[in-house]
Structures are given as structure tokens and as C-alpha cells.
Amino acid sequence: MPNQLFIICPFSCLEPVLKKKFGKSIYFLTSPLASVETADIQFLNALKCIIETEKITEIIIVNSTTCRFINGVISNSKQCHFQCVEVLQELFHKNFKTDFDGLTLNEQAYKLAELCISYCTLEILQSNILGSHILTSNIEIGGLIISDNKTVFNHLKLTNKV
Image (cartoon, rainbow, N blue to C red; front, side, top):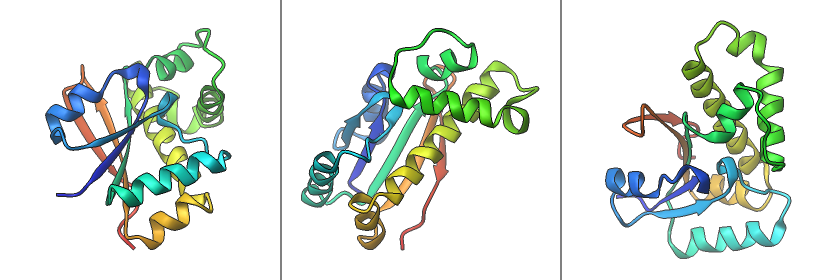
């Protein structure tokens, strides 16, 4: 069984759901919108150390269609001033005509969660410290979108082992 690191939003309270689904021997990193601050070199080095120490073989970025930030962006509600929310707003507005126009609110939430996971993955993989380590250490990175009251799990395969 792979040693899995789940990157999740602390406001979505997904730890018990993920432990029930994937077992109790999994690791969590929490950050708003499951984003990783790739400009913080000390943080990236510490995260790389944890990945090495715990022999992490799979990193899974998790979002939920019930995420307050995702739904706040879709409904244009007042949001907290996290940088990741600004990125989410930019993703939504930039891709509205091609990816969101005509979709139901639930479909928009799913699509925005998917775009957010893809964006976070790209940010991680482009980081010199963490990205190169993931690619050279045979670590798989994927996404997971949880929907329908935390009962439906949709896996997104983002990279294969290199």
C-alpha cells in the first residue's frame, strides 16, 4: 500500500472522511483550498524532508464541491483574503465562457475544484525544490474531488510515475 499524503483544505473537515475511505495510516497537509505556498523555500524544504522521511509514494490534492471558497467564488460572495482565493477567482473568470457558462451550480463547483487541483499540481511540479524531487523520486501525484455530501470520490490522475 502506498504511503499517501493528502493535501486538503482545513475548512472542509475531510480528515475523518478520508481516514474512513483510505485507512488511518495516511498523512495530511492542510492549507486553504489545498494549495501549497511554493514561494516559501523553508516550507518546501520541510515538506520535502517529510516526504522523504515518511517514504511518501503518492500525493493527492483534495477538493470538495461543498468547499466554501469554491462556492463563494461561483456565487460571487464576499471572501476571505487568502491568495489562493484570488487565484480561484482568476481561474473562474478566465475560464467562465469555455468551462462554466451553462453549467449548474454543482457542475460549476466540480469544474472549479478540478481546475484548482490542476493549478495546484502545476505549481508544485514547477517548484525547483518539490517538483524536481517528486519527478525524480517516482512519486505519483493525483487529485481527488469529493462530492454529494462527501460520499462520491472522483480520482484525477495528474502524473504517472516517471
